[in-house]
Amino acid sequence: MVKDVMSQINRSATHMRATILANKRVGQYHQIVFGIGDLVKSCRPGNFVAISVGGDSSRMILRRAFAISRVSENASFGGTMELIAAPHGSGSKWLCSQIEGSEVDIVLPLGTAFGIPTSPVNALLVGGGYGSAPLFGLAEVLKARGCKVDMLLGASTSAKIYAPMEGKRSVNSLKIYTEDGTMGELGRVTEPIKVLVEQKAIDVIYSCGPMGMLRAISELTANTDVVHQCAVEEAMACGIGICMTCVLPVKGEDGKISMLRSCIDGPVMDGSQVQWHLVGQVPEVNS
Amino acid sequence: MSDFDFSTTLGNAFFNTPIFTASGCASSGKELAQFFPLKDIGAVVTKSIMNKPRYGRPTPRMAETPSGMLNSIGLQGPGIEAFLANDIPWLVEQNSRIIISIAGETIEEYATLARKVRSVAGISAIEVNISCPNVENRGLVFACDPDASRRVIDGVRKTIGGELPIIAKLSPDVTNLPEIAKGVVEAGADALALINTVLGMVVNLDTMRPHLGGKTGGLSGPAIKPVAVRAIYQVHAAMPEVPILGMGGVSSGRDALEFILAGASGVSVGTASFGNPHAAVDIQSELRDLLIAKGFPSLKSAIGYAHREADL
Image (cartoon, each protein chain N blue to C red):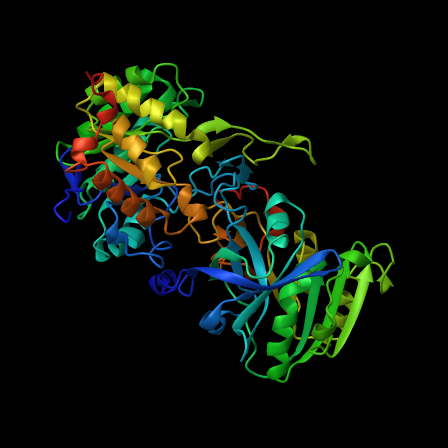
């Protein structure tokens, strides 16, 4: 059993040079499209990519991880992959400054994917900031399976909401929350979830965003029948499971807590198993 | 050109090629196997393993620094029993050469680990990572204490007998590295791994506290490469007959050649694999091409070449 799982580590990962086909500013973010050919067939919603930044003489030695927003195949460009980047740090600024036609060194696809139900269910997708990026690709897949897909997006302010027009077509409803009230409802994206869970209006929550949001949703769904699949974001050096920096405390089926790598055992994890209260601590050896 | 001899030895262990992974930078090999066949490089050096399962240090465990990174993992691992049961048989199946790295908190723990590794088939050598806090001596790192370093290696040598080569992995954070190196060789080390990470710290400007959960961390990557070259050169000058496995910021064939010329018999690739999963095989083929281009008939003929007397 363990052996089967282990032999699958990074099993679809390919290290390649990919050409940037489009790089468009959307609010505070950049929507960047890469040509990745047949690799689109291996990419699942929730997977991420690791990109080398800064060029050959860069002093930035580590790759930057980005969630895959969506993939598609078309006649003129072949397989394409889109990701959303926020030009915050030196690495993401470099990526956002790359023009169409540039080639980047990329490893993909990496990590776990969102589990897709085999029969139609009521799904709630919750995104914080540009954590919404992978949810649009996921929404398309869930819609194709006949699921009801509702989406809640939240951010501190309107400029940090990522909600492209074309993405809205793949959801039944979309509600936006901002903490300063500059877009949608005033408040936090987690506020309506309690009622939805109590009304048994949803079967599964898919979430992506800051740790605090993921933790809050896990607390709202604890001891309910609602499944919570969350894509975590922890600082990574390698993205392929060799550096052991991106670990989170996770309780296994046997009740034991392990420090799991969010790059290969994540980014998509079962929110009810992540020991959010122990993040940033070391579990007791006896627990 | 095809008769170029790329092989190397560390003690009585023979390797077809001189590029290895670095302990702690390749886990136990499975993660990198997707990118290249592990048997294509000299050996896989597994992540330092302790006797008991261990959670390691709290997050954040990583900070990128100019041309480098700090890590504070704290030797997270499954413990020697699970490691030998799950990870080693798989590596043996890959026909990979294997160097098991061990780490302990007491001199006794190192000896216990050596006893458990001794009987494992398919192992080329054992690396003894002595850059760990000694719980019996106020947490002073073994590798920074000449006497403790010597006693760890002595205990491992007595336990393991004369067959399996012992590679002692030393810290550069010492005043007199050749002296510590001499001590562990006298105690029974067959080879030396130089260098472990350099102790460092990053202060986070948002929290205005040390960024890493463990406060301090090990600096690795190109930023420490000249420190490693210096360490290799000094130790090779002091003990030219003792093989050195060099490491510290190697990210190209040119870097690896510097290490060889300074006195390394083999070179481990660590942090470079985080940025490039093909780093070890890329560096290996670049090194081979460079050695041939420089006119060396073999890898061995280049080891320590930087120490030769001035040209007349």
